[in-house]
Image (cartoon, rainbow, N blue to C red; front, side):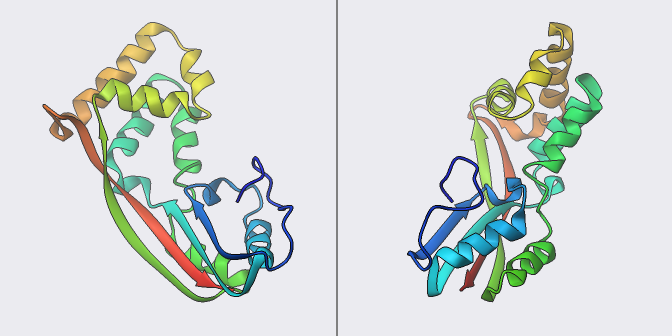
Amino acid sequence: MAGGGRTDQPFTDGAFEVVLCQQVFQFFPDKPLGLREMHRVLRPGGRIVLSVWGSIERSPGFAVLAEALTRHVDPQAGGLLGSGPFSLSDADELRTLIAGANFQDIVIRRATKTLHYASVEEFVLSYVSGSALAGIVGGVDESARAALLAEVRTKLARAIDDQGLRFPIETNIAAARA
């Protein structure tokens, strides 16, 4: 959904045949309202497709990063990672939310993709700098950041080769009809 983080959308009823929401829905402050808005702007029979990250335990890079953030930066920092992008990982919860907005023919499938980074540093810095963690990690001293990187590098050593760092991430992809 467009609108710079808005849940209510400035579109007329039935304006679209498809609404695609990729890796954003888990951040909606009012998920039921967001889904009702998606339903409202779809024509009858229109489709939604949502993708949200699966469980953090199914993404070893992020699980390790959350543990290291908790240990070396702040316990809340590790919690932010689990409660943000991975907060809607339960497919049954996702299905219930979608059904609650009067969508039909709900299908949810899991897909796994491999994330690739040139290095552990690139992974940690690119994720942290583009998230709510930037200020928290930026506020700790250099030794804490070095310990964070060292722990992530050590715990992900098996996922590092001459091509860089690679690890899987699971996504729930939901499709439904208005």
